[in-house]
Amino acid sequence: MNIEKLREVLEQKQIFIYFGAVIVAAVIAMSVPGTTTAESAINPALAFMLFVTFLQVPLAELGQALKQVRFLAALLIANFIIIPILVFVLVGLFLDDQMLRFGVMLVLLAPCIDYVVTFAHLGRADARLLLASTPVLLIVQMLMLPVYLSLMLGSDVASYVQAGPFLHAFVWLIAVPLALAGAMQFFARKSTSGKSFADFLGLTPVPATALVLFIVIVAVMPQLGPAIEAVWEVLPIYVAYAVLAPVIGWWVARRVKLDGSSSRAIAFSSATRNSLVVLPLALAVPGAIPVLPAIIVAQTLVELISELVYVRVIAKWGNHELSF
Image (cartoon, rainbow, N blue to C red; front, side, top):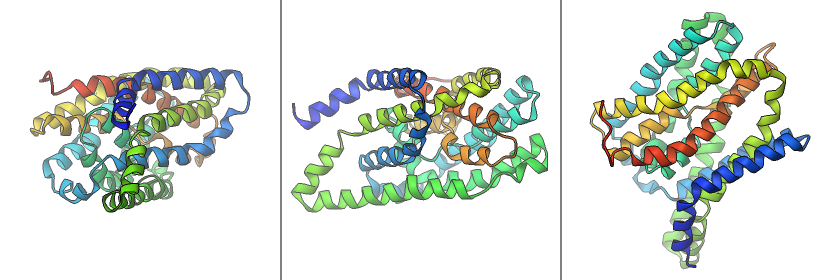
């Protein structure tokens, strides 16, 4: 079987591969003690997944992507105006506890800057535009997250938000893999062996994504136990968000007349949150453990399962037009 055929098979079977990884990881997490130690492998696995994803994106076109003013406008409106309104409504309606409100808002108000690119690519969205927009998303969420938390919870809470975890994630999960992917693309253009190696790496996005799913679930599922009541309390909010957010993103994109692949990118961005980046912020909050880490981890699990649906469902949006 040649490389192109194998890649096609992997992409066709990707949902089964991902669900298989999730099920196996869940069984291991529930039956083997000490799997939380796998948490240290999450970022390296994410970095590799993003590297092989970036390798499939024409990086030379990133500069042109930044000129897409309507796309950036839709991205910012969806993530920093409409989505916060949705989060405020959900939190206000369903939660009274201040700590739970803080945790849910912390994760749902921060748009993803890393693996959203991979899932967008798998879901036939314009991953190039999303990748080019990650610095904008990073800067705006660092500026706006304290404002949103202050509006809903009071000014004291906003002081917990620090820039360090966001910048660390951007450097190691975006900048470094992006630079390596650019070097690999240059090497592939200049040599036959480089092209062969790049073609081989083109087989790895699906296995790399499955690996990330496996590691995240093995590492985080055991952390839910000590705060299971809090998890059950926030779960309906996460499910409602997972259903409504991509529809909101799509609606905003269509209002500014983006094409199908760009609209799908806005839908993915609206639905996918920065849970792995904001987790260190939650751990730094006095009295946060075990409640805050547990409810943020719960959002990660809901989101990962949702992404497996999105890559199949959102990929079809624009073929049979959704209109509102």
